[in-house]
Image (cartoon, rainbow, N blue to C red; front, side):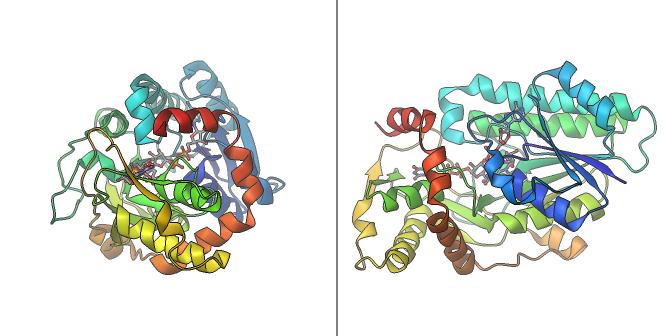
Length: 348
Ligand code: NAD
Ligand code: DAU
């Protein structure tokens, strides 16, 4: 039986990765290691929490001693590392939290893996889950490939870039077996409503303004979260050691067009008169250091591993909205308490 530690498994993407592995690989023992910060929520995994091949361990990856003890106890063959501070706006107000979790936390995991694996790396793998934001920003044309030079601009992307460099350094220096994935913007169920799509869904439901940073012409490349989980599964099992793979769906949207599409679908689903939600669109102060455009060239993962997204954007967005409409208690739970303070401070 393979033992796999998935860090950040109670978060948005992590919970979909945990579910994919628990259900698809009954012979694997899946250990979800998560600190349960504001972004971690065990309700995301209610449907699989009783599975015999699933274990949850509450731990903070900045605590090196605790991480080593857990690794010694569970002796993982694989680590899939998603735990992170993930929101760009929060990184602007509190960069150090991002250094602690994303940089120090990653190095702690690398050290623990190196210690328990010793010199024998056969059947072992450290899969680091990273982001396209490490590449910085594109102009109106071009795509990020795996060869694009790193050029991060926000404290979040700088911390992720740093963690990527450490992961590669452990491969080059100690021979640690690693793979890496750099994915574009995800969307889907369980997305915390500090990010653009779930924030707008929540605000449309509550007839609150939809804050669009700057002129709204910033562009992101959106991928349905389950398709990211599928890509992680593929690279974890078939990726070449030491390599990184860009993951995306060739699906670019300017923020303003995306929010208008969301408004259209929400009005239809809520039986509201057409154009009602778009009236909530409000242009607000831009994000400092805001990257203009991200777009992934996913040719390598497609050609080498046969990866294709399974869901069109229209279908994925429709499924996402349906999930939020059917899970308003989840939204109510995560938007109470600390979220209100964050929201007031961020949007005043
Ligand atoms: P998220 O913020 O929804 O979840 C992060 C999870 O990590 C939470 O469960 C949280 O409790 C946990 N965590 C945070 N700090 C921790 C710590 N110190 N110790 C242990 N656990 C801790 O994030 P997400 O959007 O699911 O992103 C997951 C990973 O994927 C991140 O590494 C992120 O950089 C990367 N990524 C995200 C996107 C995206 O669009 N969201 C795209 C590409 C890559
Ligand atoms: O590209 C991958 C990255 O995507 C991940 O690494 C990050 O973890 C994830 O948070 C996401 O980062 P972004 O900054 O692109 O996502 P966010 O949803 O915060 O913003 C998407 C775009 O929408 C961006 O151009 C900023 C804009 N925006 C965002 C918010 C929250 C607004 O216009 N208004 C808002 O209120």
